[in-house]
Image 1 (cartoon, one colour):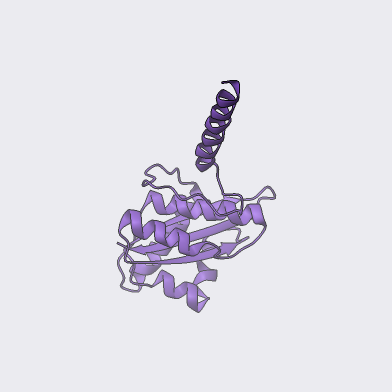
Image 2: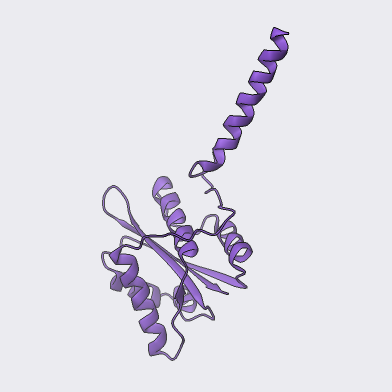
Length: 167
């Protein structure tokens, strides 16, 4: 009887430990955990607000519609910034996962992404993106919504992730 109780206790502990792992920031391989519900709360810092304003100002200046901000997309952007900071990289790793999440939860038909690193001001980051053909193509793209995160690392260097979506 004691052996059965110990086995059941071990199984219960094992299940409980695995169930809690989804609350962690990233899986063991560093891949961010993807929320299965839409994140509705996101607090924007001044850099984020200004960067989004500049992007929309630019779009309007060339005859395009401004983009609508979506908190869930900003959350996904912040998640990627944290990944880049943790791994000391600037890249588009796991973009497919972010894109799929936005398509599945928000009904996006297409998704694009810009990243930047160590620009001191939002104007500098947007200028850098506009001087890069691929990044400029995303800013000028056939998108309706976007989200953005600007996150500083421990040294104060800023990581920018801007995700665009056509919803």
